[in-house]
Amino acid sequence: MLEIKAPNKLEIVGTSIFLAGSIEMGTAEDWQSQLVKKLGDQNVTFLNPRRDKWDSTWKQEIENPFFVEQVEWELSALEKADIIFMYFDPNTKSPISLLELGLFAKSSKLIVCCQPGFWRRGNVDVVCKRYGVVQVDTLEQGSELILNMIGK
Picture 1 (cartoon, helix red, strand yellow):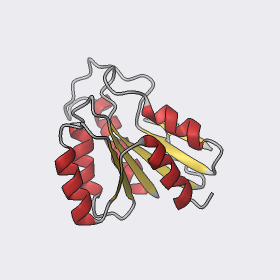
Picture 2 (tube, one colour):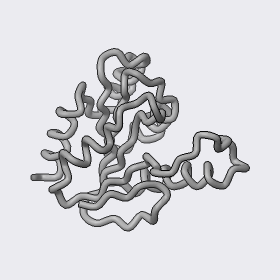
Picture 3 (cartoon, one colour):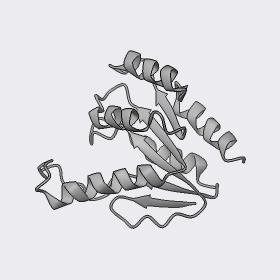
Picture 4 (tube, one colour):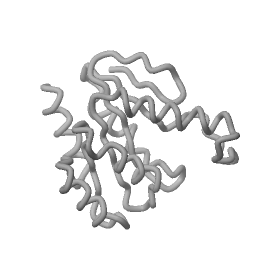
């Protein structure tokens, strides 16, 4: 198992899984660490956008090189990933995750975990149904699905 966090170089070994979804520092649980721990004995590379040294004072605009680096890393990692696992934490709004859902709904590599109570669950349900995206309600169901997909 290998875990690559933003903004590190994307040197992928084995099946790659991008950990998309709720981060909203201080609001969302660190579900990425839970999933990495659960699936850590598999021959996979986790692409984790949860940056160790994120500075919440960075302006989120194209003139900020640190912000641009983060967004570019995420887009590249999403495109390179074999599987995109997307989690919507019901305690968050996750606007960027909703954007990424729209970008990759037709990719055939998306698994969505949207817990009951997420404020836009209905929108997520409709998009997933329309584009045939596999959807689960819990992280446990998601990790089991990933294990089945990678054949372990």
